[in-house]
Every structure is written in structure tokens, then in C-alpha cells.
Image 1: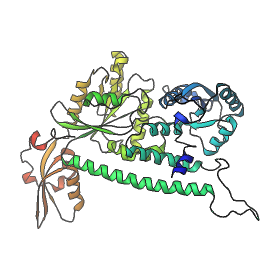
Image 2: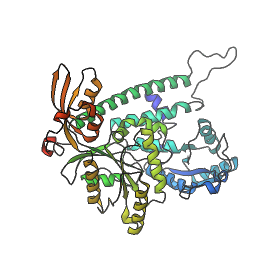
Image 3: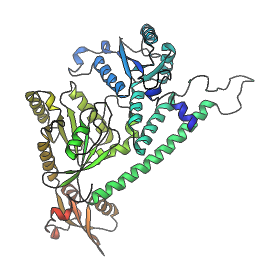
Image 4: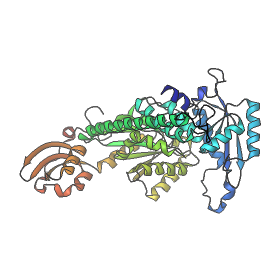
Length: 475
């Protein structure tokens, strides 16, 4: 796979520390940002007031490029009624960028769009330098920040999925067969050979990631055998999730202003004011135009969100487009199947704005009623963290732990499996009528399995917090 990975690096991973090959060691690579503005086609009356403009999208792309270690020389925006199918931008703008890149000795041009394979190829020919699009940059940052084996597998899968349709036409190294008499080749072309090897590698990666997901399911099953609630932090990238995670758990997760500074999931024990224990997980941040292949590749990581009892949706209250950011996060959660999970909105960075503004925003979000609550905090200064913990404790108390006795028929193995998977089984007795199981379950699960409860014993005294072990043992 060494030669294949070397070829793949020509297209996507492209560590920005050595993308062009001509820059001195340690010096950042220089890039120009390019974008197409199609606002002329849109009816201004239909554009939301908080819609992201192309200038603001370019500013976000600039932050992404800096996170990857590049030096941004400037940006070029072309306003058109429609995109050029072959090159996205018009020929005049391409010539302008070509002259600028040659004068500034630019290493690559970064487009704030997802380019098709033909557009990518045509732009590299017209600009006579390397071309990257938004997806390539995000994949590059993910490859840079992946530390665990699981994270590297997921990034490689997303990269190869992106590379596969873009192999055609990558220079003379790809041998081809002729179409006439005397030009028929001896066998498989180099292009098909590389495609086959990439497909083989993708199948192997997916099999390995299936094992990762299976292992994590077993780990979650062990955690849920002792009924400890799980809380997942999610939000737009650079919203302050890792800083909040460190403040709540005294952990030392990397907290950086660079986008996607946190990639691999981290779990820590959280002590609530009621002395109950919980598990808090920190996940990767989301962003606009997050590649669908990346979401699919990172399902093994993002399953921590789908299995959580409560989602803390962290919002940067000081961001200009916080409503757009929230919609993007909700869109990704919907793709993951976690949109209906209870959400507590955490308005972070209130130290950067006035108290009146944060109070008005919190009141507006409460009036919408789409979340179970809204809390204003500053993870940096610690303001509001006590109230956040009290709110989390109150919300989790609604799903209190109960000791119940269930009678499950032998033929209903799925219910028995659910009890072993989602509850703490205390006793089990097998008899002619079925299986009697005494278990410590959440109120939600008890309501779900109401028809199996032996009501004559349902009023048995509940165990103490010590018996349930909510606060004991390592997370």
C-alpha cells in the first residue's frame, strides 16, 4: 500500500507542511482563497437576515486554513448568475488568480466549494498550481489531529472515499489502452489497478471500523450495566466544548482556538451536585458543509452522541451566526438519528458580551420550546457552571433509577436481552412461566416494559445511591 498511499497523497491528504514540496522546511505554505458568489440568482426578499454571506464563509475558510498551518495571502470572489460547469469560475477570474499566484509564489489555491473531479483537473491546468477544495482541507485537518488508531482509520476511510472518483486523468502515470488495431494493451491499466487496490483497502477499513463499533458497544454495555447516565457535548467547531469539558471534569483535553482541535472522543466521570455520577463525553465539532463521507466514516465516534441520555448543545453566544451554527448542528444530529434526544442549550462565552444580550437570547430560545432548557455560562471564567450542573442534575433526576421485578416469557428473548443491555440485573429466577428478573432500571425503560412488570412486587423499596453505585467506581 506504500505506492498507493503515495499516489493518494497527490490528491487529498496532502499534509500542508509539505504540499508543494518547494517551500523551505518549517515555513508555512502560502495559499489564495477563491469563492463563487451566486447571490445574484437569489431573491433578496427570501434571504434570511442571519444568512451567511460569501465574505463570512471565506473568513471561516481562512480560519480553517490557518488551523491547518497555511498562510493566507488573500481571497478572490467572483459574482456570477451561475457557475461555469467546467471550471466553476469564469476564465477571466482564473487568469487573474493565475497571475496573482505566480507573482506571490503561491503554493496552492483553496476553493470554498466542493469541486467535481473535472473542475479540479481543469482548474489545476488553468492555474498551473495545486488546487484544494473545502472538503480536502477538512480531511487534511482531521488527518493532522487524529491521534488514536480509531481516528486514523476513520480519516483514511473518508480520504479514500473522496479519492476514488478522482483518480481518472491524473497525468501520464496512468497508463491507458488504445482503441484501434495494434493498440490493445497487455492487460489491466494502471488506473484500474489503483482503483481496485483502493476499493480493497476501503472494504478492509470498513471491516476494521465495524469491529471498533462492536468493541465500543460492548464498552457501553458494561457502563450501562451499572445505570450511570451519559452526557454528550456537541456543537459547532470552536464553540468552546473542550474548554467546558475541562472546566466540568478537571480534565486536560486540548482546548485551542483552532478549528477541529479535538477529534478523538474523550470520556470522563462527572460528579453532580446530588452526589450522583455521570459520564461526560467530548466529541468532534461540526461545521457547515461537513462532508457526508466524513459523517459516515465517523459513526464509530459519533455513536457516543446517539447513545447519550442528554445532549449538551454548546453555542457560542458571541458568534454572529449562532442561529445558523445551531441549525447546522441540528442537521448533523438528524443525520445521526439523534435529533429527538433531549437537548440542553448551553450559551457559552457570555463573558464576551453584555449580560442583557445573553439574557434576551436565552429568553428567545426558551420561548421556542425546542430544547429542555437553556443555561448561560462562561467556560473560561467559570460563570454559570454551578447552575449548569444543577440543571443537568434536575433533568437526569426525571429519569430516576427504580428497582423493578419483571416476568419475561422464554420466547421473548429480545426483552430479556434489553434488560441485560440497559439495566443492572440483580437477581434472576427461571421457572415454568418464564424468567423472573429483578433489575435496577431507569423510569423511561420501566415505562417501556410496563407489561412485563410484576406489580405485586413493584412497590419494593428502592435501593440507596450507594447500592445503585451511581457515584462509585471509575468511569
